[in-house]
Each structure stands twice: as C-alpha cells, then as structure tokens.
Amino acid sequence: MKMADKLIGKGLSTMVILQLVMYSLAWMIVLVVPMSVLISTIMAFGNMSQNNEVAIMKATGVSLYKMMIPPLLGSILIAWGLVYFNNNIYPDSNHAARLLLEDIARKKPTLSLAPGVFSKDIPNYSILTREIDQLTNELKSVTIYDYSNPPKINIVTAQKGKIYFSKDQKKLIMDLETGEIHETSNINKSEYRRLRFDRHKIAMPADEFTFEQSAPGGQRGDRELGANAMLTIVDSLANLNKLELKDFTNKLTRMITKAKSEVIEANPTNVSVKIEQQIRFDESSIKSISSRLDYLRKEKNRYWVEIHKKYALPFACLVFVLIGAPLGTMSRKGGFGMAAGLSLFFFLIYWVFLIGGEKLADRGLLSPFVGIWGANIFLGLIGVLLMIKSAKEMVTINFEFFNKLIPKSWRNTEVADENY
Image (cartoon, rainbow, N blue to C red; front, top):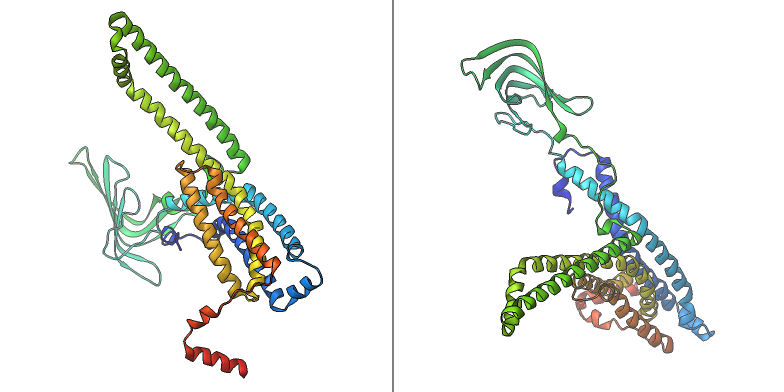
C-alpha cells in the first residue's frame, strides 16, 4: 500500500507487481520469524499447562528447564537459518527491489488521450483529438504538432486514425487516414509546404512508456550486502580514518612549529597569539578534515549497526523461547489470541529498543553493539527471571482484571452459552 502511488497508472504487468511484492517480503521475514517463535512457544506451553501436562511432567521429575531443551534446540536451528537468510538472500532481495523500484519510477504513466485536450506526454509532440470511439478506439479529427525537427514545424491533420505500439515496444505508431501535412521553417519564414495524404504513419519515441528491467549489479547500499562484505568496507573506512587523523595531526604540528619559529625570531612573548592567527588562517582545511573524520565515523557506525542486526535478530529466537515458555505455563491458555496478545507486548518492547538503539548508534550516542544487542540483553534477563520463577513454583497469570472491563450483559451471555 505504501508503494501504490508509485505503481498506479504505470500500466505494469501482474508479474512485475508480484515480483516487487516478493522482493519486499524479505525484510518482513526477518522480523516475522522471531515473532512466530515467541507465539508458537507461548501456544505450545500454554496448551500443555492448560491440559495439566506441565504439572504431570513436573510431578514425574521433569523440570521446566528440561522441557525447554527441545524448543531451545529448535530455535538455534531457526536462528542459524535466519543468519544464512540475512547474509545471502535478504541483501540480494533488497538490491533487486531497489532496482525494480528505480525502473518503475523511470516509466511514465500510460499515454492517455482525452477528446478536446492536447496531450504532451510524448516529447516534441502535441496531440489533439476531438472525438474518440470507445468501441473501436478510433481517433477522429486529429491534429498533431511535430517539433522533433527544430528547424521546422510540422502540423499534421487527419480525419481519423489509430494509435498503437510497435512490436518491440520502442515506438508509438500514429496511423492516420485522409489528411494534410503543413510544414513551415523557423529559419526561412517565407518557406511553406503542404502535403495531402490518404494514409500516413508517424513513429514517435515510446521509451518512457515501456518498462525495461535493469540487470542486477552496480553499487549496493548497507542493507544490500552481507556481513563479510560490510566488514571489508569497515576495514577500509578504518584505514581511511587513520590516514585522515595522521594528516590532521601533521597539519597541526606544522602550523604550531611554523608559528613558534616566526614568533621566537621576532617577539617570544607573542607565541600563543601567532599560533592562534595561524590556526585561523588554516581554519578551512582543518574544518574539511574534521568533517571527513565525522563522515567516516558515521559510515562505520552505520555499517556496524547492519552487521550486528544480521546476528541480533536471529538470536532473538532464543530470547523469545526463554520468555515464551514461562509465559505459556503461567497463562495456562494455548489459544492463538492469548499467545498473540502476550507476544505482541514483548515484541513491541523489542522493536522500540531495536529502533531506538539503531538511531542512537547511527548518531554515535551509543556503540553499535549496545544499540542493537540491548534489546536481546534486556529481554533475555526478563526471560531468565520468568523461567526461574516459573520453574520454582506454579505461577498463574490472572486475567480477571480484563473480565471487569467487559460489560455485565456480555458476561451473562457468555456464562449462559457455556452452561448451554
């Protein structure tokens, strides 16, 4: 829906739209997989608790910790698969989606002709048709102003005609019948020529109305690369940063040395004043180096953020198992609605931490590691505490508070339905 305004009126095929949707699903999968792990874990343990299976297993000596081993192993496999997806499939999908969107943006909307209105969609041509037969798509009383040859202006009139694309979709053909061509010269105003025709075809450029998909390749952004490729870029940025710092230090050293030597010869008491004047003189070069250093720092942070995200999001699968298992046993309900409600609350917390940490890390206010892994660390601690509390004693989450929010008439109906 966010892309609808870029697609409407472009005359794109269904396959192109489906292709764009498929490419756009990649970033959704990265977020959906950890959330699905949380929902499924809550549902599984909630259903077991609802059927008293958890209590029976505990009575036979199987602790909650042992019950969690299979889902933890399963989450490790899912996390490994998601790491592979993040480093191999997700970057290529993002790259293909960006190229496809750029190709779509270059395509103009489909040519539209309205009776009595000049159309200037085609470069160097103005087309006027006074009547359009909706059944046969035949144009009547057609006038065309042709500016494709700058020294001359051609005005073509015809009683009727048709318009269609050539087989290779490169040209727009105007097939006219019974008309005249009036040709005038911009150089010699006295020159004028009129031609009559029974049948005349005009081939106009249609490149902007056809869709051509670019081949993969070219420069890639940070979300279009795997972790290994980004680490290489980070190393290059670190080397550039060292060179800039070295250049900055050398310039400051030369400035101070030059100022000292000049002042000592003249007046030793004015060394600091001379140094300040020299710094002001070279202020532009210092600012230039400073801005480059700031740019390199931001670029390094941006790439590090994306590198950590490729591993932090898969690791969230393990964190959500730690949270989901005790929550399921406490809720004692295995329905999808309950699982979705509880998981949405924790996933929103995770999302806020992730987005906030990413923004702060990009600005250099937090290290990329803390900004991205902070959500896992925080929710992981909550999961461990919930797991310990649930393992030691049978704790049940009470939902009576929510029942009070339901009107009495609705509650009476629900009770009657249950009795029935």
